[in-house]
Length: 68
Length: 68
Image (cartoon, rainbow over the protein chains, first blue to last red):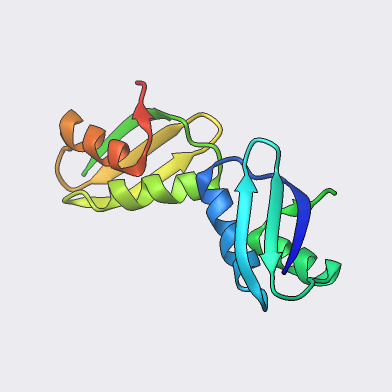
């Protein structure tokens, strides 16, 4: 199990959180996605490590941006 | 055709706008719903007048509040 944490900007409400959860949750091997709206912190548990590119694509598709 | 304008608080993004449009759009006789996210202004065109109660219920169901 790998846990990856990124910070996402632009999420403003629970709907935004849902969009991010949906896109990141669809990546291969992802078992859990936790999002803290206030801080933008997104923590992803997955069975194998996720690449920066995979995460960037998922966050892009949700309509947001990784800032860290 | 009746046009009713209300002001809704709490909408923070495009997803919020979609939720409001969906709930208000489901009221009887509604033909068009226009939402300005910045001002919270919601303008509803309907074939018959909508009651305050109908609008309040729809906005409540979307998860927001009418402020004027």
